[in-house]
Image (cartoon, rainbow, N blue to C red; front, side, top):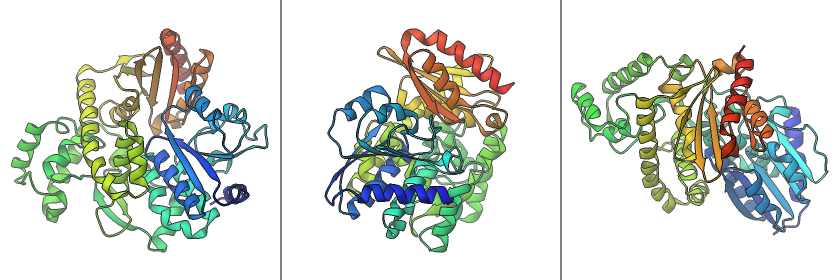
Length: 447
């Protein structure tokens, strides 16, 4: 942890403790796995400190969402996994606010004393790869009470949800992993990601990694398992070492034939982390929370993250329905391809919550890595854009967060995010202008 991050978290903890016990504290967070775990961490910490909380998970925290919050009467609002890009709006709320974010920031110092900002990028920590919303919120929870180290499983679930294991876990995230291993709060096992009640289901619903020709194809799976002399109704963990190696080799071959980037191949069989000696693996948990948040059941996802075991079983079934939708879109995208521009590629999707997910998977497992991929969803009178790049393009100068923010702002919309992944919202009739602007910016960046 950098000295500045520690100082900021201690100051934020002082602000929280300055309010009387029993104060109702408002929590606003993002609706993906990182946002859900961030909200769960701070809400658990607040509850333990004898504060009440009211949490909301938002998909698109721009005008409409924050406008509703601004009309409420709150003493203190804590924004997790968001806020730095919406700081102008938050400052107008005239309410004491704490921002805990790892996305690109607009200003280093807030204009008003009522807004206190903790941003990874202002603490010599790269918010793209070295810290996520959950790990920063975990730092704040420890500043509130050092006993909150047991919430580390939620922090690392956020890391997995934001794909910050690609290129190895590093920076502040690694510091948390090392500390948790030392204190025996987590267990590490090197394994492939393949979960499901049966081997057949595990392969069918595998979307990240996506095995082209196999994921979502029951017949191909049946033929493969017969070829490898494996029972389709067996659980992957019940295979012997030789059987596991045989299957893993075949799956890796599929990805190699698709020319997957080395840093993506390195994530397939890698160290994975568990809360205890069970099947509670953090990336698996992140996938479940993502399915709830992006599948339209944010409350369920929050309940699961807070530890409701009954809702956990409901979430398992919802996850299958969510993955089926993604599989259908991926198969369609694989068949129909994309629209090519000079600086990027794009496709149209039906669901704004799924567009970014599909784009990220397609970028890593279906298309080559030469250009970033955008998804465009038309909803009412708005366009919702999600875009995904890769680390190689970022090293060449790609900054999707800037491209989205700049293009959307010029057209009266909103945008922002990370260099490798970002999004925007604009009015529908500005689509052509937006595509031209984004293309110009990305071409210039990649020159």
